[in-house]
Length: 475
Image (tube, rainbow, N blue to C red; front, side, top):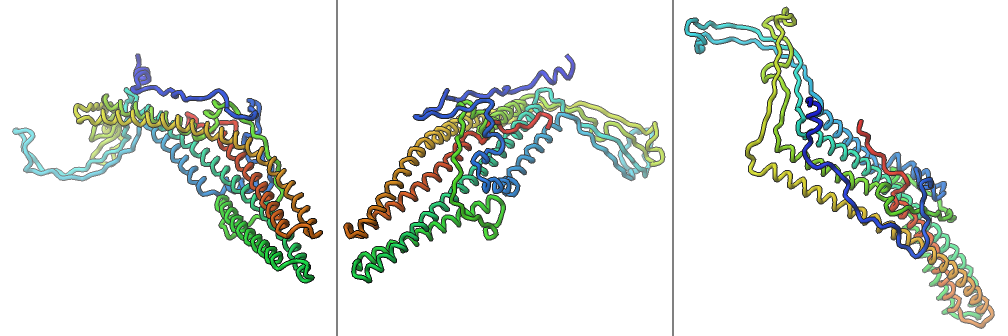
């Protein structure tokens, strides 16, 4: 067996195999869920376009280009890729250009080298130039395990970047739809205030004619003031969501404003794949899996310390190949040529348990990475299950809320007519009016929760049907 075969065939430490995780065969839901198919492309790429909101899309593009947290993640990814390049460089020899020049004088009174000859004081130059080569012969796979771990860490950084990107997009989209839900609530309260102002004018005229009591007037004024207070509180919430969106897209909050919009796009249907799909699609699961691979490689690095380190290197004082002369004029001539080559090996004989401790540490690190991976998978299952059941429950709540708004509107109209006809008290009108306002706001809130839950489900599914791009072995 040649040296290449020997080096390639001896790598200490365990070879990585992805541990199993408890994956159910299907989701448990009381309503049918739309199963994705391999040809389903609706979530690939720009998944936020699934919501068909033309004002959302440019905000997302701005966030992708300007968000500072995303830039931090991109810089961390570049660092991880550079670490991989650094680790891979150890597989190859390092070549240095060595040059030195010195002038020295020897002592005439130095100890004799030969008793038949007396010493003389000499002054001479020493000029050296040439390349130096160093290379660790990776006989037991220490360097290869380091490269394996660095590659897994670079892939983990790629998955972390994708997860940061997904989290940012989900947070921005959620805040945007919460912002729009506040817009709808503001419109509801404003229309209610218009109604209340008209009612106040009506009650005031009746009060002037002696047809309404002072209590009726005071109650209507109180109702109007309460509505104005609700409007102010909603304006505060709207401003907070607006400022949060500005920060995420990299714009100073004072320089950013979104015009109000009260029309909501249709709620999209989110196709759901099988539970096993999450292992390929969720970037946080991919990051946890790559962390396991990196931890496994570190076990091999730790175990390699039990074996000798063999270096192919020149002598300690001379370059591996070069020239040495006392005069610059003949430095590069054939008689001035020098060379040296050698092997060095070091084997630790006693370290008071240092290597064994490092191996045990690496084993425990791997066990922790496995547990973290399995916990990440369990959390992914929980989030998708919550998203599926949440959307089903919210759809039922929306239907009931719409029915409640319709009934409250009818009750308010009847109460108003009865009061005008002198059959009912004004308290009946106020009660019906408050119920209508409450029901309309609740319907708007449920609609906002539906969009937020849809975004939550998309994020739980990994944001798309393609897994995070991996770092190629050529990087």
